[in-house]
Amino acid sequence: MTIKNEIKAYIVREGLSMNDVLNRLSVTHGWSHSLSNFSGKLQRGSIRYSEVRDIADVLGYEIRWEKK
Image (cartoon, rainbow, N blue to C red):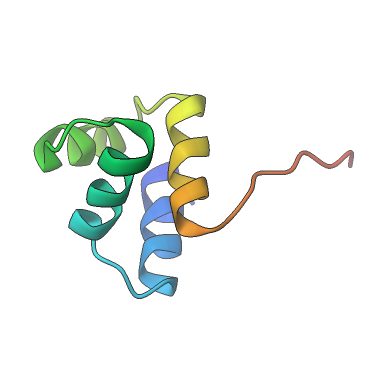
């Protein structure tokens, strides 16, 4: 599964739209309101780890690393 599909799956599970998530990111983490920039980062796979953590935060998740 690509990072784009994984993030979108979590957004859908929470019953939110990309716009909803972007609005939350803007308020809590100071992100730009540009949906095209957000979508582009997901499409290209150029999203930073810190940005993924912010997305997880506004969706109510945390990222954990577990040893295999």
